[in-house]
Amino acid sequence: MEQLTPGEWASEQLKRAPAFAIATAIVVGLLVLSSFVEYTSARPKTDSDLISEADIAEEEPPPIEEIEEIKPEERDLDPVDKAPALEENNVSPVDAPIESDIDVDVEFTEDETSDAVVASDPIPMDLTKRMAVIATEGSTGGFRGVLGSRTKGGKRRAARAYGMPKGTDKSIIAALRWLKKAQNKETGGWEAHKWPGGPNNRPSRGTSNGVSGLALLAYLGFGCTDRQPAEFASTVKKAIEYIVNIQRKEGDDGAGSKKGWFGARMYTQGICTMAMAEAYGMTGRKDCKKAAEMGLAYILRKQPPHGAFGYTGPGNDVSVTGFQVQAIKACLNVGIDVPKAAVERTGRFLKTCMCKNYSTPYRINPAAAVQAGSGKVSMTAAALTGRLFMGHKRSAPDCVGQADFLTAGDRHLAQAKQTTGYYPIYYLSLSMFNMGGKYWRSWNNAFNGPMREAQVTAGPEKGSWSGGGSGGRVFATSMACLSLEVYFRYQRVRR
Image (spheres, one colour):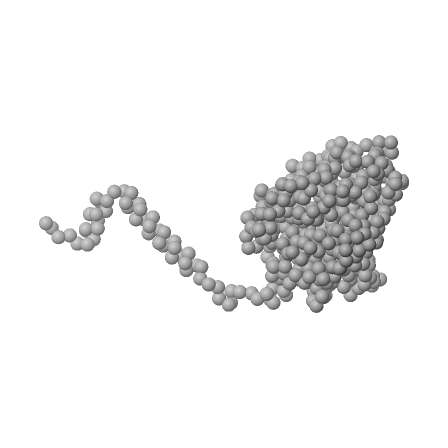
């Protein structure tokens, strides 16, 4: 037999080998090659590749995927039925049952498009699973369906869906960096009187607890927790501890007890209770849950049958009541028990706080079924926000009537130009966002640009806003930040 060389032998074997065997050999070879490439590209990073946390604190905002300005989606239909004028003889008295368009047991479903929970997700996995179960029960509201858009992916989706102008996220980050600088590093709170909003602005010492709660809410609204992102984790942790520590822990559950009191006025009570509820929902911290429960218990001990509050307890102040309604809703959102009677009392307030033209005044007469005269833009926006939060349908006559009052004669657009009107802009943003359709489109086009243009862009106050009245620059910056977070802070009501 003729002796073959190695090359000739290999050539002969290839001719005899079946086609599938040759293909298999080629695939195996490619897999070995790709594994080698992946291994070499995944080498550990050297010290020169890493940036220290100290460096991050002094840098410009970290790169965030650019979000082009996109028009809001058109799937939300405009309410088409104009609300009829209120008549005293067809408005139920204060003690009447809640109307059918008020859903006491509001149910929110989990957002099926939410990102899987990964290391960068601020919502703990175990809490997410538990809240998904709570969402199916009455009087609670689901966690992911309400706060879940604060994740990285959730913010991006919401920004695109609701037309968030490009650069809004950078303005928010600049604001959070200024608030970090202004925080008292020893106590964890913010002292309003140390940060006046202008030459003639002298903030009150008594507002420090309230503005500390607002500042914490601004961080939570952007998805920041006591663990991440690293740049703000310590700020959030200290703020949580500050609010937990200022709360009264002693006392019984009697009507005159101070147990659960955060100090100052009922404004502070509503704000701090809301902040503790949201902090619990995003971190799972037991101290936050306890603080929210005690804060809510104090609010409900002070809530009268007509549902409205004043500076120190029962009253007729719509502004003060607005923050108590938000606190009650925040507790519902995260599964903290709220008695049905308290929700009904809140509904009773919302039912009787309107004038014949659907506006809401600053102070109400609790005994009147319809309020006299005409109300204010700020209070009407606060009342409409409360209605939507507590389960009124967007298409209900009360909601359409209030939204039409706010937009008639471009009242809302005139307010958007007054960039230091942080309080009405906050409530207009929440109410117009949740009404959707033509209401949201006109507001979104009007408020975002002027608000960001008013932000300080250089110097020691870079990232902040001026004004703020008795709350000073901390109040102004926190409220402006919360208004700009409206795109993803809460998911829009779906009805």
